[in-house]
Structure formats: C-alpha cells, structure tokens
Length: 249
Ligand code: NAP
Image (cartoon, rainbow, N blue to C red; front, side):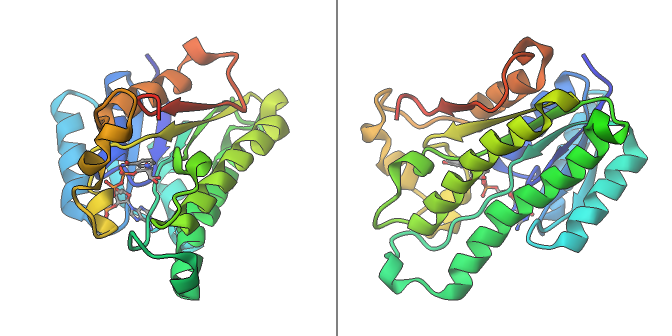
C-alpha cells in the first residue's frame, strides 16, 4: 500500500478507468485526467470515494501543454507524486491508408499519443527525480501491439506513434534509472473498450478475436493489473521494458 499520488491520463474510461480503480484499491491517491467526458470521470471518482479511496478528476487534453501543466499543478495540491500512467491515446478513423491520410489527422495522433506522453513524463520527472529533490517513482507508458504489427490498412499512423512510445520508454528509463525512477511500458492487444468505436468500428476487437492465440479479446482490468504491478515494489528491478498483455497476439 502507498499514499502516493498517481496521475492517470485518460482515466475516465476504458483501460485508464480500470487502472484508476486498481490503483485506488492499492492505496494510491488518484488524479484522473479526462479529455471531455466529465460525467465519466466524476463517476470514477465517486466509485473510488465509495470504497474509501481518494481521487480527483481534472480536465486535461494531453494535446495541450497548458492542460498538462494544470493537471500536474492539481496533482501537487493533492499529495506527493509517486507514479504517472501515460494512458491517454487516440486512433484516427480505422481503414484509412497512408496515401489517404490528412496532415491534420497525423499531427493530432502524434500530438496526443507522443508529445502528450513526453510532456507528462517531463512533468513527472521534474517532481519524482532525486536529481530534482524528489523521492523517486514510476512511469508506465501504454503502448500497443500495433507498434510491432504496423496496423496496415487500419491506422499506420497510430501504430507508428506507439512505436515511438516504445523507444521513449527505453530512452527515458536509461536517462532516469539512477534517479529513483523506473519507466516501463505495456503493449495491450485487442481490449474491449470504446476506442474501437472512436475509430468507427465498434465491433473491431470482437471481429478480430479469432486472430488472437487465446481466441478472445482482453478486458481493461487485465491491463490495469499489469500496470499496478509495474507501479509496485514487486517490479523493483524492471525498467526500460515493455510487456505484451495481448493473449499472445
Ligand atoms: P478509450 O476507451 O477510448 O478511452 C480513452 C480515454 O482517454 C478516455 O478517458 C478519454 O477521455 C481519454 N482521452 C481521449 N483523448 C484524449 C486526449 N486528447 N487527452 C487526454 N485524454 C484523452 O481508450 P482505451 O481503449 O482505454 O485506450 C487507452 C490506451 O490504451 C490508449 O493509449 C490506447 O492506444 C491503448 N490501447 C488500447 C487498446 C484497445 O484495444 N482498447 C489496444 C492497445 C492499446 P474522455 O472520457 O474525456 O473522452
């Protein structure tokens, strides 16, 4: 158990929501970032408070540096930062080839998935690094098996953004390893969340389930369990690694 603060971007729904609940159950004070769905974020806060946990919801589009600074300011007022989960991520419309992609789509994907994660990590390192007077901590980056598969004919831009996250995990981990901070990643496979609907294909995960060696989609809690393990002292010698949680995909 810990009484440290964890910041979870995109904590209002899906994998972020499950991670918020799992982290609260382990004693973390949870800062739930959300892009626009205040109702969903407030529901997660209520659920945590109903179990005697502590949580706040903060509006934060990780495509905005000002929002990220405000998120971490709110976290500072809530307690000592011990962990960051870089979970917020978006897909463009599914089934769009690279030769059909607009610059706006590509830039938005990179801005949210890559720049947002790097800026959040910057703010977390400033607070957690022993070099800056902090007490150490953990950063977990949510990647995707798309980073390895490439997502041809689906969303190659998204897959490329997650490839960048995998590289970022390696580099940042080495940069701060001697400053009390561990950095690790998770590559989820096909998980049953709203992200598939946001790409225009609500049944995508179930449609492709037969391609998963385990022959089923995953649930958000299966990713959350891996995240809270990485955040725990049980993973004290894990850094720079990215774990596939994908049913073998
Ligand atoms: P989801 O169900 O679509 O939920 C997205 C969450 O992120 C929501 O809380 C949403 O907030 C928030 N969000 C969206 N855009 C944001 C932005 N610009 N800034 C900050 N927050 C934003 O997604 P998910 O499936 O849980 O995905 C979570 C992470 O797992 C993503 O990084 C995704 O790439 C990765 N992943 C998912 C799968 C999968 O199959 N589901 C597979 C591999 C990797 P609002 O509620 O306010 O909209």
